Length: 180
Image 1 (tube, rainbow, N blue to C red):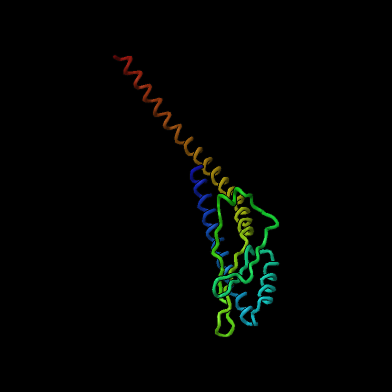
Image 2: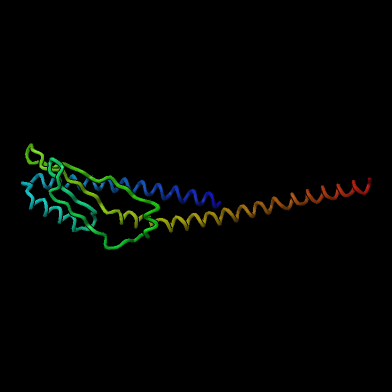
């Protein structure tokens, strides 16, 4: 039961982590596309780009927002910090979440102005994963206790007839020893 419990917990956590990584990657791509489209609709000068990146970074959902020129040199790069963590650091080390950064091209008419790169903070994904650990452990512990109890009851019922057979065999053996 403990082996099934541990295996189920690991599979559940890895599956949830893969789902959260995919969702973060999609979010990164969508937000990079939205920012690039917004900048492409206006005349994307340095001030407009800085204002747009700062506005998006103020939401505190992003770890990095960078805009590079067509040659790959940074025009604007902003890094956001995390105010708090809802999951312990050891948990984050054991189950690292690596989402793909979102990238999109900024165009002005037919000319490429730059590339937007967006990386979301993964602290909300860790908080979700961490909060799902406890209900999973509780459910699996309950299942182990019920399964173990049922197994003990079944083995107890099987044990008494088997013990009777053993007692009978021992009695027959002792009779044959006395006869010899």
